[in-house]
Length: 258
Image: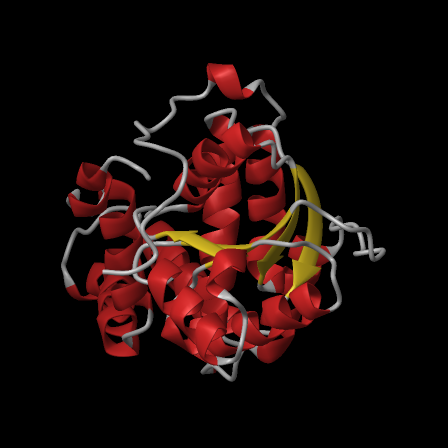
């Protein structure tokens, strides 16, 4: 199993920043009031320099914020994320890997993974994600998937850690070709990240549950931010696993229970 200390780390700074941005952007009054202040303050304060510039900048941000909430904007952003994902042509693999995305996404992913396993696409289902790995495995067991066909890790906090921790457990067992299950917006970054650590990846998209429009918009923002961050860090191009910073492993099988 993975070093247990990996499951008891503080939340990463990147996740804290994303959470703060999400809280701010999904609370309209916290966005609109400061922008209105930015737009009108230069005209209230005497001798304020660059009035038109500041007001114009605030107006642009306000229009951008509301435009991002439109369903058409979200649809176009999603189209850009899925345009380069290759189709699943039905090949068999060594394992099915499910990425956690929170409680709202679990049931659909469990159903998709169970259908893939029952279709004999792969003999093993592996769940990855802090707060999700164990829950997904438990749900799969409850619908009749045998425990010997299930494994998980519940320590990873990011997509990069999903890939690294999954590789650290599965690749020593000779598992290299995987069917990767996640939602369409998350798939491109996940596909490139898992390739980066040496997996041959067959992408298989799971449906997005019903979400508010603001939550959908935040998903798009997250993914584009993630692609830029991972790209700048060189984490999207294929590399040798030996070059990656690998987590410490104890044994080869993770604890599924407890």
